[in-house]
Length: 79
Image 1 (cartoon, rainbow, N blue to C red):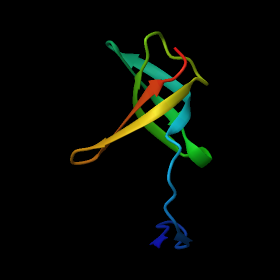
Image 2 (cartoon, one colour; image 1 turned 90 degrees about the vertical axis):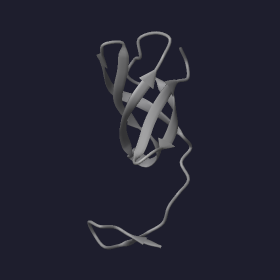
Image 3 (cartoon, rainbow, N blue to C red; image 1 turned 180 degrees about the vertical axis):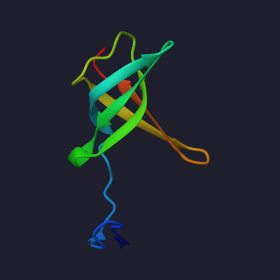
Image 4 (cartoon, one colour; image 1 turned 60 degrees about the vertical axis):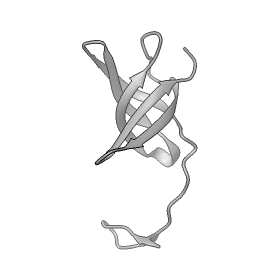
């Protein structure tokens, strides 16, 4: 079991559904990035891939890759 570094309570790891919704986003050059809310209100920053301009509230699927640190990217499900 893990321990919360804020309240020192015991906690467990839980598998994510890997789906979330766009809370806000921005564009830099040709790349979109934004704040995504996944399971239980967890919020993650990451790149957003979409065939059109993303919209707040759209459903996204999360991809996670690891090199030296986690890299989060999100694909819009309903383009």
